[in-house]
Structure formats: C-alpha cells, structure tokens
Image (cartoon, rainbow, N blue to C red; front, side):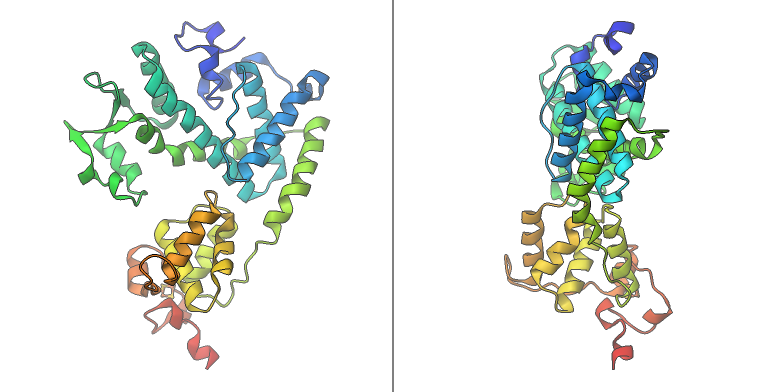
Length: 344
Ligand code: SF4
C-alpha cells in the first residue's frame, strides 16, 4: 500500500519512494497507524540496519544512492529520522538534513528531465514546490528542457549563491519568469529542503525508543560522536565577529561565504597553518576537505594567484552584517587589531 492506493493520482508508489518527506507520505504514515515498536520485529532488521548505514554515509559527506520499493523507503526514512533525533548532535542533524536534501535533489532533477507525461510533471511540481515551499514552478511548454520560476521567487533564493551563473543578468528572463533547467530548478531549493528535513527531525516526539533503534543509536554514537565532540573552539580571545562565526560553525550551521572568507583570512593572519584552518570548517554541513583546502590555500596565497588575501575591514564586515561589535572593538578598523592594546 502507498499514497497511490488511496488517491486518484498519476504518480506511482515508486515515485513517492524517492520523496518520503512529501505531505502525502506523512499522511500515509499517519493512516497506517504504524507503531514505532514495530521496528523491533525481526522482518524490520534490514530497514533498521539500512537506516543506520544511510546516516553513516551522509555524515561522511556523501549522498546515499540506493533506492528501494516504497514501503521500505518510507520506514527506512522514518527510522533514520528517529536515530538522528535520538543522537541529538546538532552537526549530525544538519549534515543528515543536507545530504537527504541532495539525495532527493538528484531524483527530482532526473524525474524532471525524464518524465514525459505532463500531468505527472505538473503534479510533481505541485507536490514538491507548491505544497512544501509555497512556490509555483511551471514547465515551459515551448521547450520541455526548461522550467519557469517567478523573478521574485528566484531572487529570494539565488541571492545566497555566489557563482556568476546565478546572477539575474546571466539568466534567460521573459515575462517576469526566470528559465532554469531541471538541475538548476531543484538546486535553487536545496537549502529549503534541507531546512524542511531538519525541522522534521527537530519536531519529532518519541515517547520511547524501540530497542532495535536504541541499539543502533548507541553504535552510531560510539562511531560518530568522537568526530564532533572535540570540535569546540577556544573562542574567548577572538574579536566578536570571528567568535560569532566560530560559534555558528560549532553548532554545525551553514556560514555564508563572506563569513567563511573572514574566518579563514583572520586565522591565517594570526599565524594559523592551513591544516588548522581547514579543521575549523569540518563542522560545516557541506564540508568537502579537498575544496576547503584549495580555498584556504588560495586565500593564503600558496595556490592560484599567489596573493595573500587580507582580512576584510570592520567597515566591510559591518556592511555584510557580519560585525557583532562590543565595547572592546572601540577604535579598531580591522579585526586583526582586536585586543592588541590589551596584549601590549
Ligand atoms: S568592529 Fe570589527 S572586530 Fe569588532 S566585531 Fe565588528 S568587524 Fe569584528
């Protein structure tokens, strides 16, 4: 049984299996009166094991690629939500939410490219974008490779991207709509999907954990927690802007690009080595060691242009809403000056 069985719907259960966060799937779970204790049944062992494996892969910074039949996907997703919730480690929740979002993004981009049935596409757009994010996305009937998003909705989301290709001036715009291909359309919503999954974890209320899930949570805690628990930073002597950025990183939250540049250039300026700076970013939900190392080396001037980047001025940081000045900041124009008078 699945959503397909209780509604007149051109989407198949195999389609719903890819998107277990959809409202229809939540409704299916509600109607099935599934009791969490059922995870202790022997036939659910595979699902519980699979959920734990999925979390380990995602926390490792990879997209979990396997896709099974509808019911297995739904219970695996539910079991993984319960495990992540019970682990209660903020950085793990954020990483899990991001890589679950990226997994769905891959399926959705593929569906938007391959499905030829217009009713099906329309319904998918409705169920994902309109029902979850209250945004209307339309298929471009003149060229089936493209989707249309209203300029206002586009700008609200693309302003977080720094690549030139997302600037409105570089997009095809007509009649108030921005045209995007399937990959771009779903990429635009990654942060919102990730936030939706994060909120689902946070909102979950579990009166008592089934034994099978409890055992897996303890195994995961033993293997994953040590990676996160040591990563608390000594932040007291840093300027408030840097301290704030470190606190955000410590919570495993996403830091804007400009704040990452400020953090890295500051750390390099006070003499930290590339390895130590890269280490600071390991809590970021989208952390990729290779890319981070390249970027830090670029800022340090050891790669690329060979120019060492300066720490942005306090004025620039104020304009970017990255300044959290306290009275100790009086009279300084760059974060590297912070505390100097105290140290002299
Ligand atoms: S005044 Fe400068 S050092 Fe102080 S918080 Fe703002 S940007 Fe940072």
